[in-house]
Image (cartoon, rainbow, N blue to C red):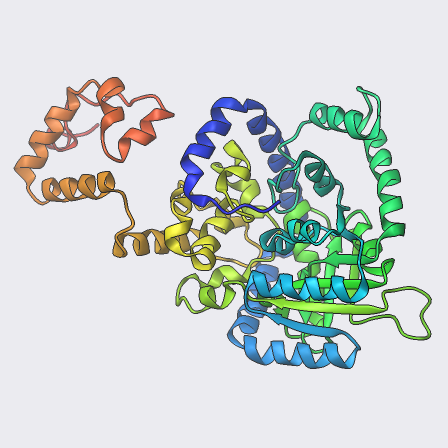
Length: 464
């Protein structure tokens, strides 16, 4: 269930904080665990050198994107796969509809994929009369709930164990106090029937190696491997930014991504898919379709500053460390990609007017850039989009008036001193909430206690 409403971020985040206090506890606990695992895993390697290398590989691929995409297409075709180019989400969904019609597809299983969430694949399949089942445990949970993912790696981290117990009791008949192991076993039994019955398997792609035409997929549960090998047709949706030059590059990128995402040296399952099964092979799909999806990526690539966001490997490390994301989870962001990475790719892919105020959903603490495995300068890109918003006249009237007033005062020392004296005696707890810019800040915080003397006065008297 995809959604695109980033403009409601402020209201949505306020509702979550006020009405769903359990979300903060569940998300905070999960993300702190993820981040602690990352710290431990990065401590086992020379992570700074690995991050430099990964940044350079991804940057080289993006600056030579046309060359490597054409090479990947040639290799995939030679491997027997079908290759489709999708400029938009509608183009990608038309490819899927053609495959469904040609093979008379009635049921599908789907591995975890943020790109398919972005495209709205599940809704489209249901409109075509195809029963689609998410097979990742977290995705399975939120599909039963009718919700989109809340996190790039852990889609159901906003739900507590008791939430899952109630859900599985209602849908699968498990005991109200079932253990996590019992819940997982019940889901496994239910999904096994879906795997065996499915005509179509759907996946994303973590990376695409150009020199061999290899789609690489990382997972921990084995559901992607079943989704891509049991059904007779496999469709892989791959963002064009996922290209890497060589199969050899995967050895480092797969490990670095797993360490950044969950703290594992590598995912429990890594699938390398090049095409359909051969006559000598006993299992695998009869047809493989690789859909190379743009959907706003080339527009983001064209931005001289923001293009670096396309290096993202979707590990979720920036979400796990972000103090803002930890308060609300991902739903408040109103789009498939949440947290710091969502705040910098949404303006480029959806348009800045539609993505506001996501670039402002940050304290600019810089923690995200410290953990990014491919060294995306996220704070710089957040500031870039904020500057663009000002240049395009997209800021609010209150913000514009407030900043102009501050500028006028700051250019006039006497007026600035007089205004400071006035503010020192202002009852902030009441009046502060009505001020431009500061009003929203004070809604969630205690008002500061102003000093009785200005900084300039203290400086003149001598600060001890």
